[in-house]
Image (cartoon, helix red, strand yellow):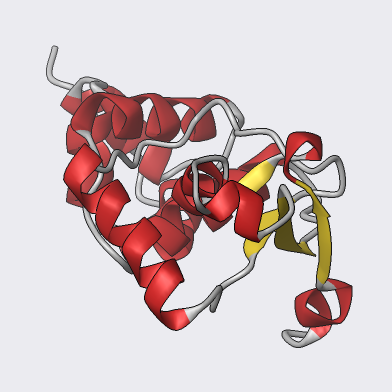
Length: 171
């Protein structure tokens, strides 16, 4: 992957062209949104919004939100800076959202549970989810709501680097 590629797509677009995703587990208090707005007013716009090719937000929902509020809306001419990242699947988009957010703060429990379940249902391995989201297997287990037995089966399925030992249940 060319890690410099997204910056080559940097451009300003109408804020109305950009839309939130439907899985972001990150929430910010009204006070912190005001702090974000003040930060932009004080420091200028320092971080573009990361979007998919269809302009759905991967990272930057809160920057997008405050850009629609005065005085930023008028000062920006109702435009926002974006960079485009084209992941091969929805899991890549989710990984992008969660890793950007986790690097900066905390997530709400229920949305994170839904994300882990969706990724597991898409066939992603515990190992891949752990690597992509910076989670240990036990964190994924707690968020998955699967039984211990079912989770262990997932950890030994093909594609996982965990033990290929046969899982034996008590009779």
